[in-house]
Amino acid sequence: MDHLREQILKLREDFTKGTLNEGDVNKSPALEFEKWLAQALESQVPEIQAMTLNTVSPEGKPASRIVYLREFEHDQYWFYGNYNSKKAKHMEKNPNIALSFFWPDLQRQIRIEGTVTKCHPNNSDEYFNNRPYESKLGSWASDQSGELSSREELINKVEELKNKFTPDTIKRPDFWGGWILQANYYEFWQGRKSRLHDRIIYVQENNVWKIKRLAP
Ligand SMILES: Cc1cc2nc3c(=O)[nH]c(=O)nc-3n(C[C@H](O)[C@H](O)[C@H](O)COP(=O)(O)O)c2cc1C
Image 1 (tube, helix red, strand yellow):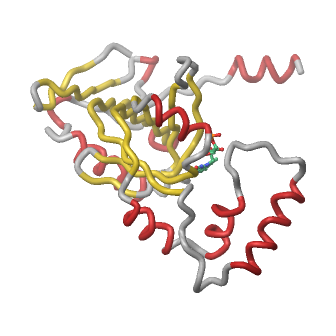
Image 2 (cartoon, rainbow, N blue to C red):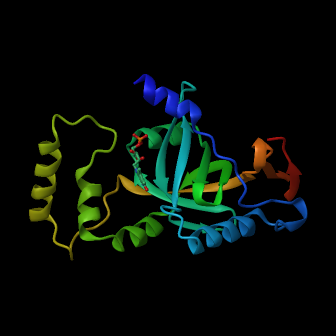
């Protein structure tokens, strides 16, 4: 164990893969995001759509977990999950949330903040209907964030549901759907040598995006 701690302490990577300048970024953060996403896709960064979703409970306790980005357009970022889950309860009472992406291969981080709403049920239906049957069954079977007595309980529920719904009849459960983050803050972070990283932020002032640089 001491060896493990020593190894972790010694891990140190210098970031040298890119630079980020105020003059080079797009005036629109949504377009800058798309540019970075396209570059990540091109570089075959694994799981680029995985983002950390940070929420805060009504009592002010934060929690974070990974979810998948599914759609994006005009400063809106869409993700899906269970409307009874812990994150859902947080977002119901406190719509201020934050997302972050880390793409190690590009030495890049993106942070997005804003407020969240549930998407229209028709949009959730459309997304759900395009999921594989097994994923659909999983959404029905999982009382997400609820306690299970065993893994068998979950598996048995899936088996029961297979008898109830065929691939043709399975519809979205009311307790499952999408959320949309409306962004009001972005940060694009490019790792640089000797920890002198580039951090370019976009803040909204009177409906105009202002571009600023932060100290690393
Ligand atoms: C790579 C990855 C992708 C995930 N994608 C989703 C997702 O899109 N939606 C979701 O509800 N949970 C997703 N999860 C599971 C969540 O991290 C989390 O366990 C779940 O949403 C329950 O969180 P909660 O109890 O805070 O609500 C994903 C986990 C990982 C590791």
